[in-house]
Image 1 (cartoon, rainbow, N blue to C red):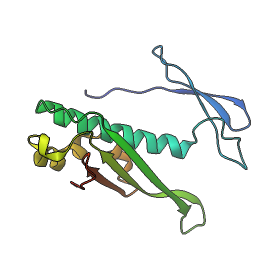
Image 2 (image 1 turned 135 degrees about the vertical axis):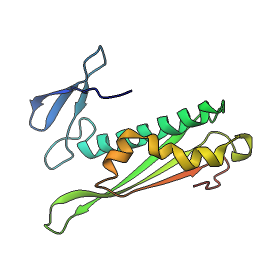
Image 3 (image 1 turned 180 degrees about the vertical axis):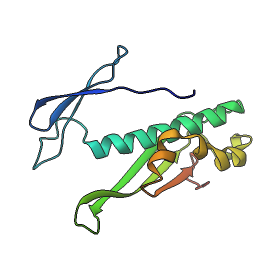
Image 4 (image 1 turned 120 degrees about the horizontal axis):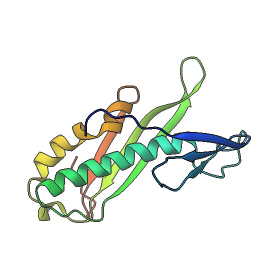
Length: 148
């Protein structure tokens, strides 16, 4: 997919609660800040950012494995986003760790080394976000063995 624009509309419902409309017949999503600003009635911006990174990494890993006709299902991804203060004392996402869990053991997947060496490069969101936030990507198989 080459150049295109993504348009999303956010409409304030009350205080920090926003309705996010993605268009194209997709269901809208309520987003909110945690207390003390909001009421946690939906995911926060940090949670959405972490979800976008995790979703993109999961998609990229799945796509790369399926190119070799491999089935790693079900893939599960856990994202840990460290939020803290920067040098100016402002809250920022300081780093992220993504743990991708394959649904099968590594021995059952052909071309896994090649996939593990390249899938991140095709992840649009992670490569973009990673320019400003360090992202540690780990891959584990169904037995818990760390592959990357």
